[in-house]
Amino acid sequence: MIIITIMIFHMTVRSYPMMRKTHLAARRAWRRLRPRLNSCFVGASSGPGHEDRSEDPSAVSAEKPPHTPVMLKEVLQYLDIQPAQVVLDMTFGGGGHTKAILSTVPKVTVLALDRDPTAISLAQQLAKEHFFPAAAPQTTPHNSITGRVKPMLGRFSELEDLLSNMNVKPGSIDAVLLDAGCSSMQMDEAERGFSLSKDGPLDMRMDGDRYPDMPCAADVVNTLDQQALASILTAYGEERHARKIASAIVEARRVSPITRTQQLASVVAGSFPPAVLFARKDRLNRPAHVATKTFQALRIFVNDELNELHAGLCAAQTLLKPSGRLCVITFHSLEDRLVKRFLRGDDLSNLDHFSQRKQGTKKENLSHEKSDGSVYWLPLRRKVITPEKDDVKENPRGRSSKLRAALRR
Image (cartoon, rainbow, N blue to C red):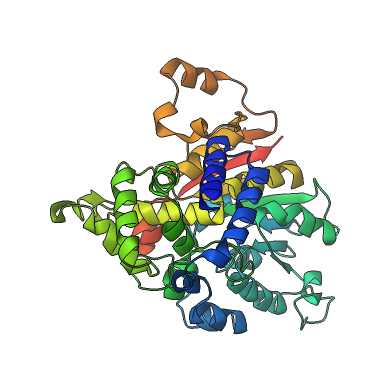
């Protein structure tokens, strides 16, 4: 069974990103495999932290400091939302962008999507605070869809069905915001297993406990073979030392299953000489842990993030009105390359499109720049938008963010 699972995984990576059916087959194989997994690391998927969140998904978030939205000024500028328009926030998160839109644009309606139940609980609270004057305050999540904020729990790939159930038609939305990647709330909560600086269960599932059979990061590192792990680290983390790290993981799990975030961080760090542990630098020239790319790769794989991002872009293309506006914020090169090439109208049927080693010749890149581009999108700015220095100082987590804005033709 494990060999079959690995074979399916390799098929998935090679055919990315147009691989949704294959990826579902991999998930089914995981479900068949899970009863045979060692209970000591399967337990990391459903530990006490997850049970607590399902009982009160907003309890932890209520104690956290206010969410700081990334490039808020630029998002509002390029979306250029007008009164009474309909806006789709595809990644509600802590609600920073949505709150700013509600406070600056009168009579606007925001469709708030997120795959994380914790985020949706915050959206439901916000929905109770914002309703049209003609309507009474709403008291239930279901009824709150008649107000200015309409919460929707689901993934990008589920969006069109969710909107169809709300009678929202294709070509009826004025502006779309997509803020990709992991939210600050998810990073700050140790029990979610996203942060290597905080010890918690090695989970990383953005959906929380919505899909109990969905494999978590602990399942991946304790089950897949060395070659498959190296492939994940290479494809989704662009990790140059993928084979070395994969070998260290396999050796460590022979002694004891890897079930905690700092346990994995220590295993990765142990595969490097002490002198290079913090030799890597982030965009602020600060030391970066050698396990950062490993955590990124596992998170992307567990949550199928790049496939979901592509599904979200396709949904935005379908849902926006002509002359509707799209803003996409990304946080690493894999996401940004996907968005750039989608808006340019490139063929996205092969993983090579996102490899740094296959950027194309200067002549090919120049021909792209001179071409008419996508028949669906008109860039609002030719070059990618990055945060200002003052914004980075105020919100260091947004240092690697990039914004691309386009007009629906």
